[in-house]
Amino acid sequence: MFAPVYFDHNATTPLDPAVRAAMLPWLGERFGNASARHEYGRDAKRALDVARAQVAAAVGAEADEVVFVSGGSEANNLFIKGLAGRMPPALLAVGATEHPSILRPAAQLARQGWQLRRITVDGDGRIDREDWRDVVSRRPALVLVMSANNETGVVQDIAALAAAAAGIPFHTDAVQALGRIALDFRSLNVAGVRAMTISAHKIGGPQGAAALIRDRRLDLEPLIAGGGQEGGLRSGTENIAAIVGFGVACELAAARRVETAAHLQALRLRLEAALGGLGATIFAAGAERLPNTCYFALPGIDGETLVARLDRAGFAVASGSACSSTEIGPSPTLLAMGIEPSLAQGALRVSLGGTNSARQIDDFVFALKTMALNLRRLGAVAYSG
Image (cartoon, rainbow, N blue to C red; front, side, top):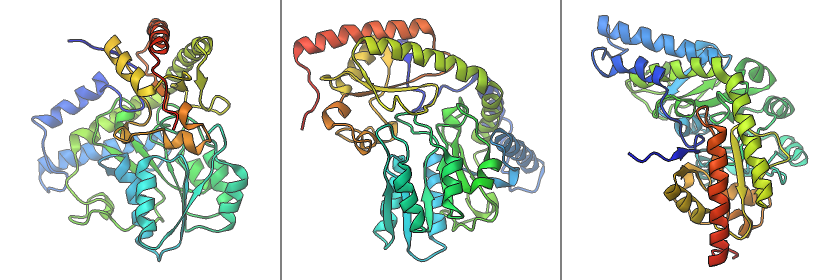
């Protein structure tokens, strides 16, 4: 089977063998419902409790602050709609470069009478401090700023932003941050963060498991009503196999984070040094970024064209967010950063993982250089409208 070099870890990561091994019994002989009052049910409940403790420990939270859900998008929606469901329409503030699972439910609330305020970012994708002060002065009912951007990798100073928000209910989407930078919900909570979203499949865990880490005092309206699982916040029989995998993945990610981050940072710097020689523009180069993420463009060359050609050459990369890959046009994240549409149309994202190597980086740069020369000869220019 043809297996391209995988450079798209911000979209999803391969399942870690240790995670798979932990999950397998729950896809066979261990199959109980954690709500059942017999040994099969108690076995499932014990597994659920262990996983909840593992997830909590990885992010500096308490076990009863962890609400298991099906994905990061559900966790984000649970916070936004769950909190909005407990109050009358008011002002809602979100970062201009947030994930679609934040921006779209926020837009839904705007259609229901809420006022939506997008917080501007600077040219490197960081929250604009002057605009932030203006937002805070308006005292929104809730505010959402992601910890690390899925496209650019830009890391926001969440603790400082939350502290400046002075008691405004604050949520951070930390899906991309988990396992790549230090995360401590306790200290963030002290600073003013009321809830945080994390997901399993970005750290070698299974798809279909995530969590909303939330302050116990947070009063949320459930999105899914039913049997009252997850403290009444997310009814439905828990996916024990996926949650068990999530717990093990969190434990492994926490243990490996420092070593893995150093490896990824070295690879990213190697890549970016070579891209400089090709005349590439590296987006958000002046900001703190995730150690694994490089978002760039080769002026005059369309990003989607490069993605397709690189795929045929054996390299799996992305032109932006996997969750909005069906949309045509430049990245809204880059446009919010003030990047010209013609350059943004050429965006290409390389997001690295622990198994990637320096040799793979060098091979990728060679292939990219060859393709760029050929495309320029053919006149495959980027969209300029």
